[in-house]
Image 1: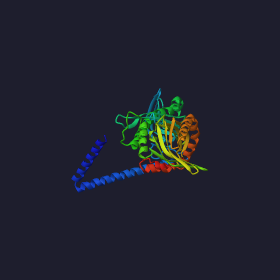
Image 2: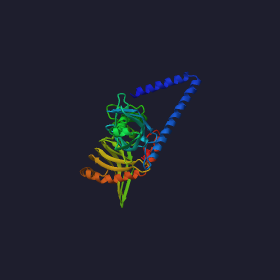
Image 3: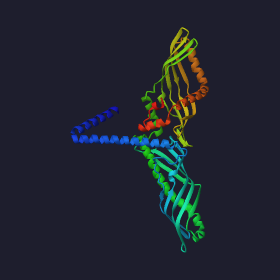
Image 4: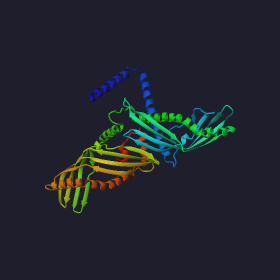
Length: 445
């Protein structure tokens, strides 16, 4: 496959060189100007994205953030005319507009990466509907302005994603519903008609909402589908995903590749030196292999509620091996040897949370470990090698679960100390300025 790619690249380069040499100087200048314009447009696009991300960060630092900067919501929303025959009377509503849609609050967001399902809820304190009505029958007629106030309006949407035949990730289907808890109305100029057709008037708010609902759902479906697809396009570009595995597992495979490319597998541990009186212990030149063999053990979910984003990850590794050199000293005597170890697997459940106010630090909310069988081989200590191997191979395996329980809290505290040093807001801004390319050095890794 690689030779084929190389041949294609060489062919393209040769064709490009031929075209450039065959062009006149004016065409070359025009091509260079076009490339310069493209580069300028890319920079402007990145600057706009960075500005929008920064506006979003500032937005969620408010006490009561409403709406979303950069996300246009029609306010007022124009609703098609409503005509309804209700027995002896006909109700006709025109110039209907809904106000207050841009003042929504994000109530919840849940993301199931395994099932590729997104669920979100938006809340409005109230939505104001205004328009002109005509209520007529064969013996009377009334018309004038009307106002309907819907209170505690709640919109909930569930979107499912799927990989299409061409390998692109896109919105598969969307379910949306809109409800409210209470409403008040004011139909002016009803006069005698209002008392005669009181049941018609009492049902008018429901009629208005029922007439608006299909139109609002249609607009919401169109807008949400467009926004999700644009977000996917910006994130994945022209990248094609396989149909054989889920996009989540495909992303994990890419993460494994990135870990190897960044030089974290094999991973070099810092040297350890400990001195206790006349005793000294040193562990040096220690390398660990197999870190990049991590995979998804269970599900990976993320959600947002109460202005806090949370995520739960269940990941594990395959076999992890390591080797190093040890040196033990007692007074003037020292012994040097080597140690090799193998861990059958390491699995972890990790819970994380981050306030939408990114001035606050991330929190680790849960950490649980599970470790497979441990094997150690040691040399350099003579007959003590067997004693050391027995002590290390037997005791940790017998007390493996107790050891895991004992080290979970210290590791959790150490990770939290690391989180406390990370400026989340600055990390997000830097990634936005660099086209969202993640660099582990941003986290101090």
